[in-house]
Amino acid sequence: MKKVLLGAITGTILGLLDGLSAFFIPEATNMMTQIIIGSTAKGLIGGIIIGVFVKKITSILNVTLLGGLVGIVLSILAAIPSGAYVEILVPGTIVGLLTGAITAKWGK
View 1 (tube, helix red, strand yellow):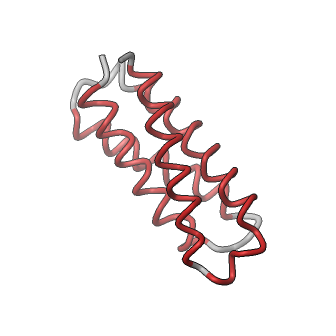
View 2 (cartoon, one colour):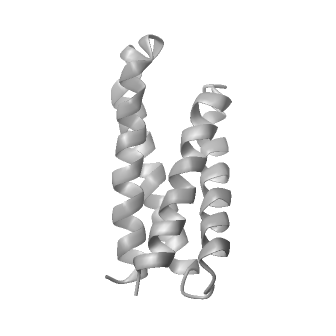
C-alpha cells in the first residue's frame, strides 16, 4: 500500500480509537462528538503528513520520531481551546508514533 494512503488510513483508525477512549472519562461525556471527530481528523491529517515525509526518510526510527513530533504539534493545536494538554498530548503523541512506525515499516 502506498505510504500516504497507509498513513492516512492508520492515522484515521488510531485517531478514532483515541477519540473513543474518551468514553472512559466521565467529564467528557457531553463533548464526545467533538472529541471523536477532532481526534479522527487529527489522526487523518497527521497520517497524511507522515505519509508524505516518509518518502524522503528511510529510517524507521526517524519516521517514528517524526510521527511523534507531528502528533505533539497537532495535539498542542487541538489542546489550546480546552486547555486539557495532558489528556490530549499523551494519546496524540502515541497515535503519531504508531502511525509513523506502521507507515515506515509497511508502506511502499
